[in-house]
Amino acid sequence: MMEYSLPALPYDYNALEPFMDEQTLRLHHGKHHAAYVNGLNAALKKLEEARAKADFSSIRALETALAFHGSGHMLHSLFWKSMCAQKQSAEPKSGALFEAIARDFGSLESFKKQFSEAAKAVEGSGWAILVYEPEGKRLLILQVENHQKLALQGSIPLLALDVWEHAYYILYKSDRAKYIENWWNICDWSGLEKRLSAIKE
Ligand code: MN
Image 1 (cartoon, rainbow, N blue to C red):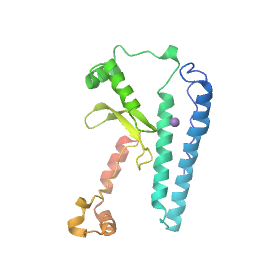
Image 2: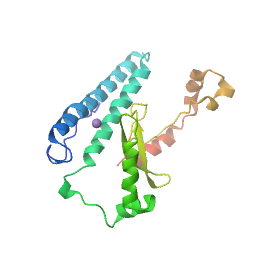
Image 3: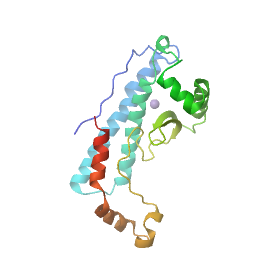
Image 4: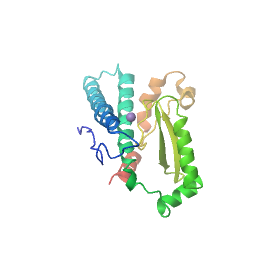
């Protein structure tokens, strides 16, 4: 199984001075981000052990650990790539990015304003992220709070199982377990395979 590893920063630790200091960047990358990578690998190992023993008594904690450390790793990796030294930072004045931002936010200025306000208004710890939403083919700004909440930012959903009661109550009443057990009979594996190969390079 492939282990996740801490990516090197694409610049020196002091490259973002004076806006982000070297000490912060060393701690943030070398301690905080590294802890997410280690936690992600540990969660995958524990899930492997749980499958081997067919013991899923800790499944909620394991899935939460997977999402928490996985999202932490993905978001930090994107965060490092989202920055560069000031002398390389040039706002777009034309081109594909400029046009996409103008189309979806009105102007670069409006985009920056909304992004800043979203970041400021995140409750507690969290993130502001710009995302591409493929169905509407548009850019969106999202706040991410509690990134451990069972989502892995940056992943592409390939298979979904709706476990809201409205999905099964008439047939299964409160027996969600039975619904899930039976759902595998109607799982479209070939559709899943097609979706997976469509995004693999
Ligand atoms: Mn962080």
